[in-house]
Image 1 (tube, rainbow, N blue to C red):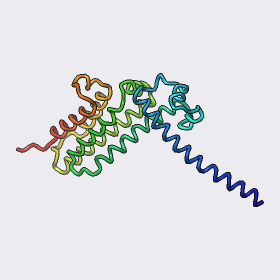
Image 2 (spheres, helix red, strand yellow):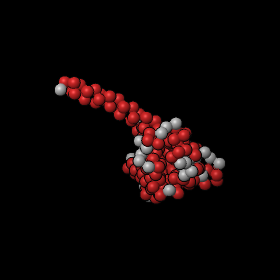
Image 3 (tube, rainbow, N blue to C red):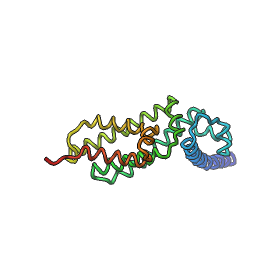
Image 4 (tube, rainbow, N blue to C red):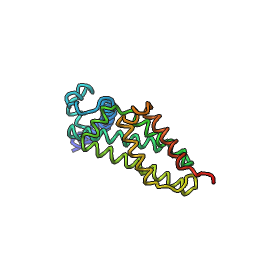
Length: 209
């Protein structure tokens, strides 16, 4: 009885570190997959390709998600979640609504500048990741809209159509990400979003009579 219990306890103790290590390895794989996808896209990459690049087995790779399609979605979602969290930290201690918008859009530009054109094309041409992209673009537009409304309430911005400004931001995010605006202006993504923030807050600023 004691011997059996001893073996049970030992087995339980042995499993616990492996779970922790598996979780850490899974997080490493997601980070590495994110780097590969952002740099190269994902449509042309097979599970076999990824296993070779990551030096892991299929079983290990499938610990990230249960299929290639689910892996792609999980990694894409992870990119947006991590980027959003970093941007929120960046603007959290900025009390001025105008400066907050500039910092927020600069943060979006920094995040978007990590994406290659190949990743953008793959992301928007695959419906599940296109949905993730649209969801996050709408969330960014809503966030800017909320900051504009806050600025109006505090008399930093003149009353304007915050919903229109938010939708304009969403369209401009897509234009920058697709590369069309960058080609037309010669700006990098980070520079484009910084300029966009400056244009927005100066356009909305309260004008002296």
